[in-house]
Image: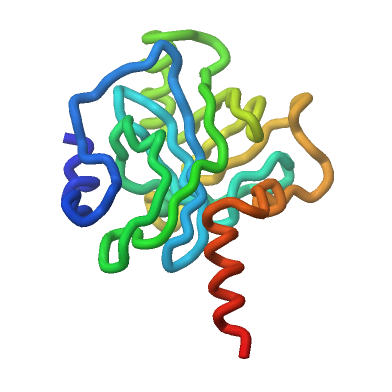
Length: 196
Ligand code: MN
């Protein structure tokens, strides 16, 4: 029951997040990156596998520069419907704060497609080394997700591979976020409140 931990952490009468339902499948495997202002601002990177969303929290956000190795902490599986979730998680709930979709699209493993790709991806996930190709609006091209062999066993790195979509200059996902996004509006409103 991969979604048990997700369910245990949340009260769906109090949080607008999607409750779990039977797994479903799209024709293509989807990915989503949600920007999440909780106790700390972070990015949640999610890949569809077996009808759920395998999920990693990335404190610094993803990068298009191959020199950056971004810590990605694996967290509990999320239901497929979470791919569309944006909104406010009320105070007192797990992950209380604001969630907005930062990027989304589909992904492949670059060698196979459909069911065959999914089986290969699950094996690669188990082995701790995923090679994926993202087809998003911001994130494009080849990426690697590599599980760290030392330290906590949920620590991975998200690394852009060299290709036509890689950038050589500094990349900051915050700068690639609309200034009027829901989170940015809330942040600027609270900084106004704090002015004397
Ligand atoms: Mn989060």
